[in-house]
Image (cartoon, one colour):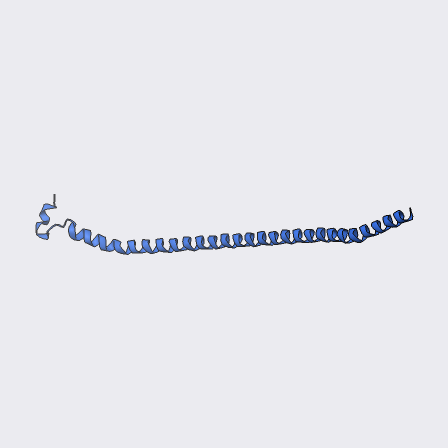
Length: 114
């Protein structure tokens, strides 16, 4: 029986020797997986923040361009109005040349004395 007892003790010791590194490796693997998961989560959050920042920047740039376009449209509209007003006297003179106003010949003023 002594041989059997020794064999059992030897077997338990071997299991402890083999089991201890296995348990340690399992714990290390769990820690590694946890750290890896945290890194992935952090990288994902960083990427999301960068995307949100770029989106805000793009929207800001779009609003700026929209305001610039609106301003340019106003300026061009004012220039167009000025040009049209400057052409008005020219158009009026052109109309008068085509259709001169009615004038009475001074020699015929007696026609107006009614």
